[in-house]
Image 1: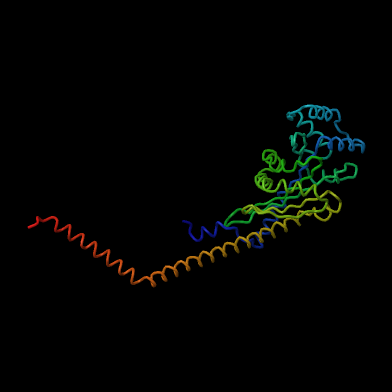
Image 2: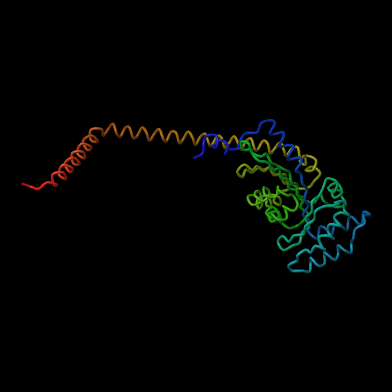
Length: 313
């Protein structure tokens, strides 16, 4: 059985001001930008880049694209990954980690970006403003002496296919791109992937929501990559405050429900005690009478057993 201190340690605790600041710092350090782009959209981006004067390895790209489009079950080779990594670098994503994955039977290029690459791709010529954006702010309600974790993931989807729920549960790809944060992202993806994807395509408005899975808290912002969205909601500091607020609300709710449960259990125990005492009081004489009968019967039985040891006269 757990001791009182061990039971307290098992519950999430409210964030102190210092813990909140540390969580904010952790989240702002663990920031990732990922791009999910279909072959068709990547082709348009490369074409636009070349028109704007960028030197792109067009022949290498056409080779990869041709093989990917013609193969029924395309699997990217290491050579394909190297080629696409080179092209992403030419677009501005120097040393970017690149993966090619089939989602819903369609190859998609996935790579880790950076603010500089975003500035490049946000230019009107690349039409990144047609993208959809999902921003995840992840944090954990700390246990006593527990680790305070968190991070921010921004996903730019430049594809006509609804592939977000596939990506958010793709643990292998996420681990390669964002490391240990992948585990928490997959938990959120399993719980919310389909609903986020549906909301993303059902409305052009910005959607805010928060989810709690145990001590894991996620604040999710979904919207189109319009300049309004980027200017108003692309503040990473803003989402850290939303996560901290969600953690505090979750902890308060857990403690409130726990206290209510304790009170209900205490009331039930007291009620059972009263019922037992009332039963004894109402039936005291009957209980004494039954006890006397049982005692007399046992004494008689023992006496009979003793006398049965001696021969009868």
